[in-house]
Image (cartoon, rainbow, N blue to C red; front, top):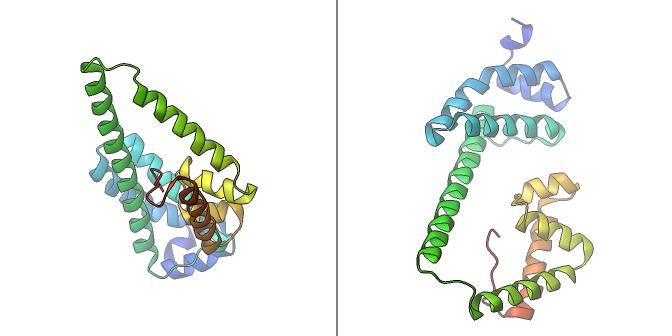
Length: 189
């Protein structure tokens, strides 16, 4: 038992922002079991639930100087875990839909068609246009599109503001829509 367990959440946040490892450890000890159970109830997968909670705490430590809470620590942590868990669930559902679609495709005996060839050509055109984007815009766009990072995660990773990330993604999409049409969309953006 440390003196840190007597601190309020607000006091621990102040200490954490100053880089106090013991404050971080107390927050971790105080909330990890509850957050894990919360995620586990939604997922029914201990490994994924552990990974989600660990990712939240890892991000919290690596970004401790930038933490800005508009809500209580517990609300922040629960919301973070819930959102990350929902993302994992949605990704799983998307994979399931893809696998069902793939199985349907195989069952119908449909193999390489002109449509598949056209799709590959179109995909190559898109990649070529993305490669033409300015380097920083392309980097931000790719982190959003391929890594699936949020605007905030990209901003933190690159050391830029959230609005800069949003603007760069918006400009990249505008450039691509200029080339491929106003209704052009990419998945996961």
